Image: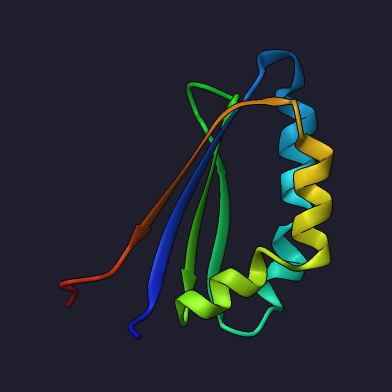
Length: 98
């Protein structure tokens, strides 16, 4: 199966935005070491600091699925439970590039 790109957007509750961002930032280093992770970049809204967006590229769906079962990912999800308003996951496949 071709490479997978994921855009993962989390909107934190305003009173918890910094705590959510800090917890999610701890995902970056261990995730980049995971098999199949090609790119894993965390962004925070320039105009809306409650919006946290990850741009992720994975070798396959299976690698992304394995990421969702890692201890560091599960610990993060537990840490931010109840501190967010919305989460949106968009899976993409490249259709053209140069």
